[in-house]
Image (tube, rainbow, N blue to C red; front, side, top):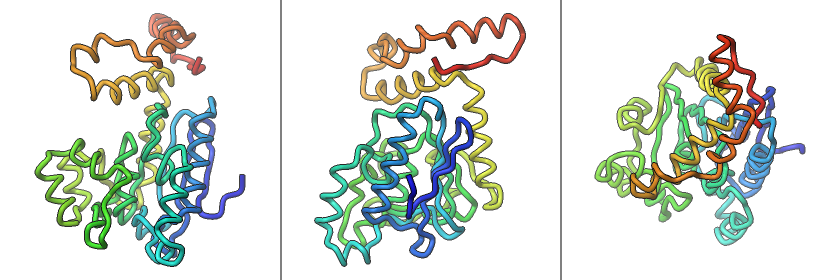
Length: 263
């Protein structure tokens, strides 16, 4: 599929999705969200795609959230109604609770509003030193309803999260790392190389084991610890019946690198 507002690059088992609206700091309008949803639908369904990176074009912004000028022109109702038809929600991933393949966010510049929500929906977040995060929606009469008001208090201490959400304050990449929201802060020139390094390390692991780990971690968060530990989730069951489940220990015993098949 030819995209107008995003760029999708496939490198063997790695998919790189770039929000490509740098002229508006990668702000989101409905057509961009629809394209992101399609790209991540394809990623989720492609057995040859094991890891994804999402980033933004240009150096100024990862994504600054809603394109408010576009929204004012067509009406918020059009935007909200259009989002209902997306499998993965805003940005293609904020409501994608059934994808257990890892997604890495490579944040360059501003990640505000919906942009921050997209980053929080990723599994690993790498940020450039000049990155800035925040949920400024209340300052323009909105709220971070694409998961931001729910994810932020789960990803950092409650009172600190409320302080940022209720004032619309922004945080630096260094603050975000200290608060445990992001994994690594690097110079802007090293951002994509660092994200790809994370992807490479993930690809060294068995893909079904990675999916099983992500599913168990996410679903287990809502369960009492004893129940979560004792539960066999679907991806775990699939992993235990797979060829890779046999290959891993065999390769270790034979002192060779495992050859993962993802089945």
